[in-house]
Image: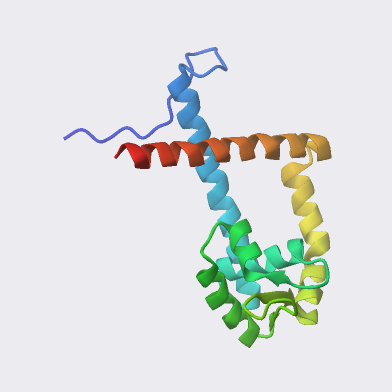
Amino acid sequence: MMPLDLTIPKAPFGSSAPASNDDAVWRFMWEIRSVNLFLEELCRLRADALGITAPQWMILIALADLDRGSGVPVNAVSKLMKVDSSFVTTQSKLLEKKGLLRRKPSTSDARIVEMSLTDRTYKHLAGLSSQQEAIDKLVFGEFGVRGLSEFASKLAGVRQRLEKARLKIALDL
């Protein structure tokens, strides 16, 4: 039996353009998958330093990004991470036991749990800031703020269209 050829189709010799639209789509998808794998590995390395999992690290990063001083509801974190709120609830309880975040009922609605980072976690993140700035410059420096914002917007558009495509395929089944 012949082995399956999993190489990414290349453009014709001397051309920088993909051989076809299908080739360009598949190359884009493989590149996105590769980027995702590297991002997951970076999260895992950061998480290992705290003795937590990569998804738990992402909860901490989501809180750092979203918190404006009054805590962040579980559902806001789950929406940002694209996971079920029960997952964030379970994982945040484990992070609370480790002293990395605080959970408290909302003052306006006791059914809502608001989370915030502990001083220990803020100190840990502050200790990483210069290293993170260097990594950000290495990875994203060529874009500049405007270029990176535009690229992120285009990726968000692709994500939204992928969500629609997923729904269309699910309905067609």
